[in-house]
Amino acid sequence: MTATVAPGRLQPKDYASDQEVRWCPGCGDYAILKAVQKVLADIGAKREQTVFVSGIGCSSRFPYYVSTYGFHTIHGRAPAVATGVKLANPDLDVWVMTGDGDGLSIGGNHMLHVLRRNVDLHIVLFNNEIYGLTKGQYSPTSRQGTQSPSTPGGSLERPLLPCAFALGAGARFVARGIDTQQPQLVEVLKRAHAHRGASFVEVFQNCVVYNDGVFDNFTAKPAATDMQLHVEHGKPLLFGQDHRRGLRLDRKRLVIEAVTVGENGVTLDDVLVHDETNAVMAQLLVALAPPAFPMALGVLYCNPAASYEHEVYAQPVAGAGNIETLLRKGRIWSV
Image 1 (cartoon, rainbow, N blue to C red):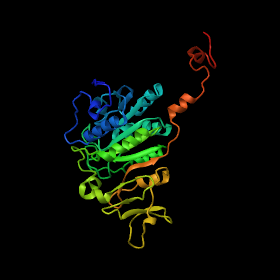
Image 2: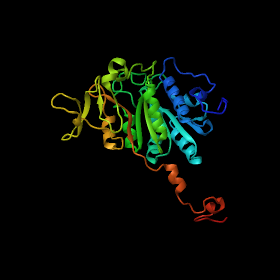
Image 3: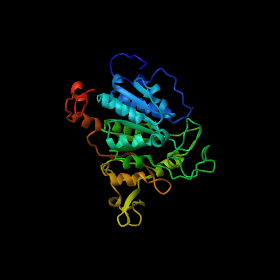
């Protein structure tokens, strides 16, 4: 913690540290930092009870730039450290800031278990489909054909979908946002913060140096209207210039179709209604991608369950609170 302010409601600037922000000019990380600082102000976060934990990568410089407690840990291990923080003091508000390489490559095992355990952490994964800090090698989310220093002939691997990974690991809250769409991103992060248990938010973040424009097929202004689907619980899955385009389920083949209301007999009743508690619907949505489908954004899945640390502290332990009893419990030997 680096700044002192007068008592009262804090503003976004009050959550900014005195450290120089050192990302490349134009990096999407700046926008994510501003969004998080606004979220902290809007929710009235107490700086002395807020902790940011990160691993290694461009995104992992995050703890330096917020005036709260923070840990810049080692590559891929942020979820493990954050779990320890939360278990040691469940009253702390703990965020995990990670990237597609840090969180899904060397840290994939830790990410899987923190999600399935449902530890009450707010996990924000910056996805730029590249290793930015180490000069542009391909990452687990890089698309097939990506040319990089480590794949000069083009990547041969099928990319990992972060939200599909999170759902497969048993995450109870999964959402997506775009770095430059501040109003939407702020609301998604607020929902993630309000969720009790592990919340996983993928943020499409542009790396202007090593992977510039990789998301232009749905983030650029000419494509945004037709290639973005902002989901809302209980609302039809509509998109497009006049919201006449929608998603319909082909019940025979169990696949999603993009249709136009008013054409070929399609009515509004044919369009799927978003149910964020439905894991199957979430799986279908995360698999959609341009150009055949829009990119689904917002809260894709939210189905709370008891958090891990709540269950840990609720579990009866013989001799709890008495270290002597615990040490002498079970089979022991006197030497």
